[in-house]
Image (cartoon, rainbow, N blue to C red; front, side):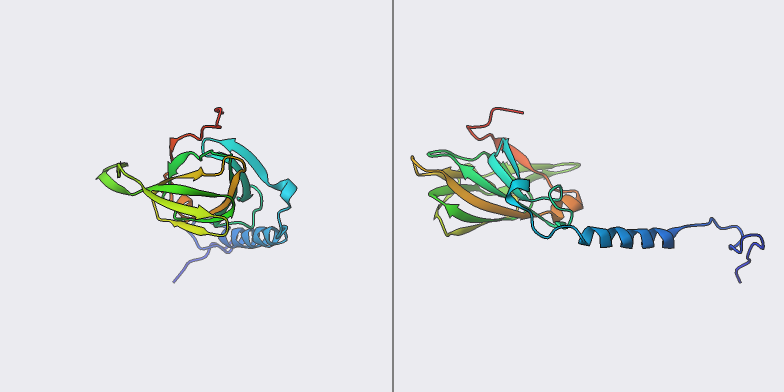
Length: 185
């Protein structure tokens, strides 16, 4: 049987909590979040020149708090240009919007596992040709790089990844080579 303290009607010898009040506050916060815009206007998207290349971020929690699980951007490759080379734990979906080119994929395996992972990357990549209207799947942890074959026009593609690996604490993004257009931070 639980003994109650007569002064505050709380069980004796137990700390008082506010868990239910916290749950109510969290539900109210979530309800406020649901009222945020469901459309991100083009002028609100963030353009970034980074080691991977020129990116226009279209899905990111900084842009919209409703976006919990997808990171997406549009990348532009200049004429005869290329992206940076990187790998990440999340699989990636790419839809080619404009242009034609190819992508290189290097399979990556675990070489050693201790407190951190050490990776072994294939020496010879696989080459995949693409053009506007095609889509590409990049498997988990595959190193990859994209090349524009057109010397006159840029190529553009939409890239999307799941944020679940970030939530789990194993995002493990590694930039292996910077895009030639990148000038540093």
